[in-house]
Image 1 (cartoon, rainbow, N blue to C red):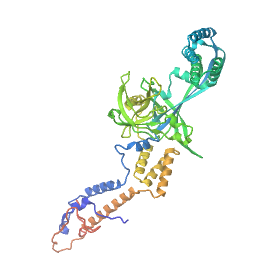
Image 2 (tube, rainbow, N blue to C red; image 1 turned 180 degrees about the horizontal axis):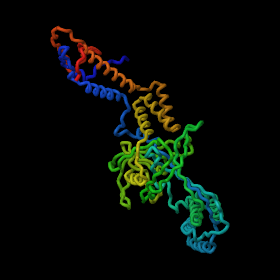
Image 3 (cartoon, rainbow, N blue to C red; image 1 turned 135 degrees about the vertical axis):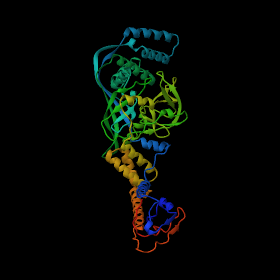
Image 4 (cartoon, rainbow, N blue to C red; image 1 turned 45 degrees about the vertical axis):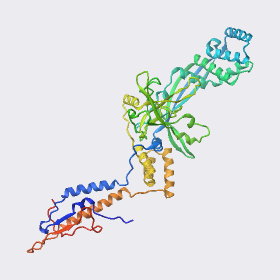
Length: 524
């Protein structure tokens, strides 16, 4: 399509009723050269902004929120390793004989075999240290346990936010977890031996309780040596022959900026050595009212590591949606936000977005039904971003939107408008900054495919708009200058002034300017 070169409306309106004085007196008093050039620059800037990057919608919706947050939301893994020493289990014969007498008495009173077995196992579980005693030999095992959570970048140089309980643990909980995970073979053998003592009559629920008995025993008598903690942030990475995988990067826990697990302020600040990290935009939780939508985002373990899923699914965070249900005050005087949005194990530390796509808190904990032990419906809680900011200040960290995030944001919005060629340009820049990022690789492939299929609302390039604007302004300036340069003929009478009556804002023939001669006079 041929580009039309027309006079900017500013000049047409100025020339709406222009009287041209005699050539010896012509002065362009309606606009000085400086004003002319300033207007030219202004028009160039305005025109060059045409078909630029779309602005972020005030309420982008869950689809765009999830897409925007994908590169900056990460999976965090905490690994504990240690050498464990535990004694063997021996039975306290005297205590067991007393228990046997109680069982016989209950049987004489008509108790059923199942009732007696339940009573015995519950007694062992409640008072395991009375019936089981440590004895040689000592058993030594190298132990490792892993936990996962979620987090997100807040600065381009690698500072992240997560929950404190993702990277720390209560010592008693840690001992029990190490015993349960590392001593599984010992526990299984002990339970099998005890069930055989009972005549093999134990039910699955009885075996489960006996496993807890053995785990509690080992946790009580456990000796831990060489305990070490390693925290890693899993960044997406493309691997030849595999769609995508995760690349663990060692993270430092900023000890001065770590809170306490609930009921404490459950926040931790981490740091990895990296550049151009994709950051998320921090919002203001005080503006979130009850009834407004919230969007938790992260890596719930059940949906991240389900065995039937392809390995590439590990890189896919999950978005859930709910409402802000209430604000609850903790014992320390600070508040948490209640939501009915689904938050599960592995979500901890992940961002929660408001309807504007900004982070207003961390997915942190949920309550359980006291009778069933199942998760209580609609009872999930968020640590507000205002609390997170306290810990960022402790670490002397100021959140900042990275170049990577800006390019990703532009690519997402351009794709939403169907401007795939423009989006492809941003995605290629992103791939150069952070090669192999799965989200970028996936969108690169999708965008290239869309272009090949003809799905591309390609606008006029920004530079072309700027060039057209400059060309038009140069022509106007040269013609206007020529109008003032025609020399005056000596001795002739000055011509009668000529008046052009053009209605304000009306254009003449395309590219045509009012007539005039070439006398060059002062331009003011």
